[in-house]
Length: 337
Image (cartoon, rainbow, N blue to C red; front, side, top):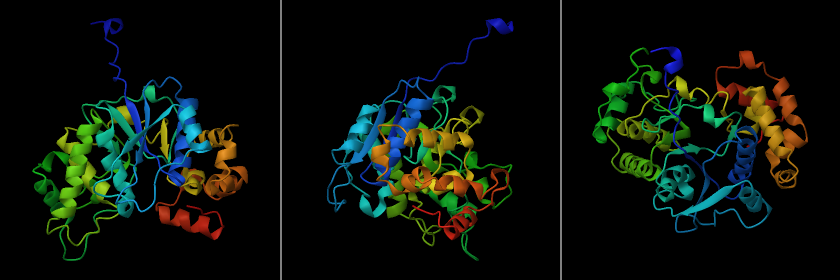
């Protein structure tokens, strides 16, 4: 068949963006996320769903973004607030919101993003295959921590796959050395996607609660918090026929999205495009009066301390461990959470 007759790559179906938004930091980050999406991926046609936990027995204080300028700005940028009830985690493990919120979402393909993410390019260029879910590989070997004479990496991870009735063998990266942490599928939960938010959520919640309530003997010496979402995530993705991200997803954690986590870290190590996306969002006329109440943006952007932080580091020769970056930023008085 001549090249001209080849079929064009199939476009992914429309999908929703899901993020958890609450009063405080997550609300301000959501504003930056929405502003960067509208500026850098204007052709995105899906819904932007901000999952909002309802007050209840697991939330001693109302976690919702109150009525006012921030909430109005999010709505003006096209966000839809979707309330959900917390049954298992709540304030003691707020990360669990990303697990529990999915049950309240539409039954449609979705991309979950942590709010501390910026859109720096066109999401339409990312080759999503929603039938094969995946998640971010931008992580360090934070779990498990192998103890002398304790269970090995293989024993630890295999016990979890066995617990959930799954075969670990297809998930092992045999190009990595035996008993090296990257041999085993481990994700950062800053982004993940799938074909159905409720189905993904059901498996995520069941897996996380099973690990918590029926912890295998090989895992009892390990800390489950704050890592529980990232421990459960590879099991969920494998159970749904997914795996590690392929080259078609390179724009995530690449030219299309940036999971910066904290603004001092963004200025220290992220791309010029990420800095430009942040500053363009923060300097919007409608957002500046709102974001000046958020200390990290006030210091890093409006007081120009971010540029000072950026000058401390060579992006081509960053320290291998994040801890070293944090230490220097703190020594220079440029650290805010």
